Image 1 (tube, rainbow, N blue to C red):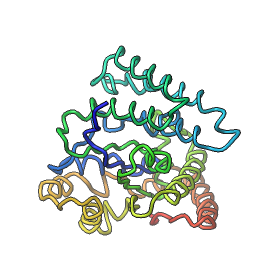
Image 2: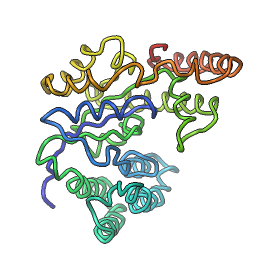
Image 3: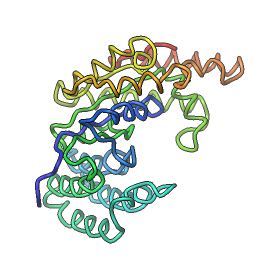
Image 4: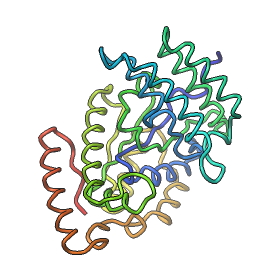
Length: 296
């Protein structure tokens, strides 16, 4: 199989509703980068996904016994929900059902004896199609789960770089309840933010040092806007492009980011419950050494 066109992609992630989409769109304005279409390819990082299947295979017994099931579920998802998404989005824009079926069959055939090679081959084949318009430029994917399973992605793309975004969990939870996906009850959403924050922390710590940059969304949209973008560019080894910064200035604001939304979106009693639970969850995260987002 030919060598992959890109071996060092840029993966953006977080807890969900934390700013990965907006950062992807900012970086898309850089001439040396290409934002995938769809902006979240999902089949690598989501669960079930390729990275989780490989991680299950590499886990110790008895978890590794579930690896083949995880692999089958990952392929089923790649040919289903990740393939055909609303508005003609998803992998269907770049591959046919027959192509996906052929790649999936080969992956499952090889996964048992050579799980890493099978996974890399499948991911490469799909991403070379999805990122074909990049014409050799580094591609950027904004699947939020990237940061939460970055340790499982590392064997697939050892040279990839990850930008992990953290955000006040109360704003994350308030955003989730307005979506058609994820937890739809505010306190359950807050608990999910806690779980994802802890998993992201553990994943980042399990990776090779220097491969992941963690930024705070509040710094990106309010406190140190230009400095934070310059830090991201420096980490990625790209110039601070004037066109990118111009788009950033025109399109990214505190108002559009809905900073502090949790304070006004609910009645006073619910807001007090949110704040009380958040304090408890933050205290627990601190015990695990998790970096706490700036408060909105």
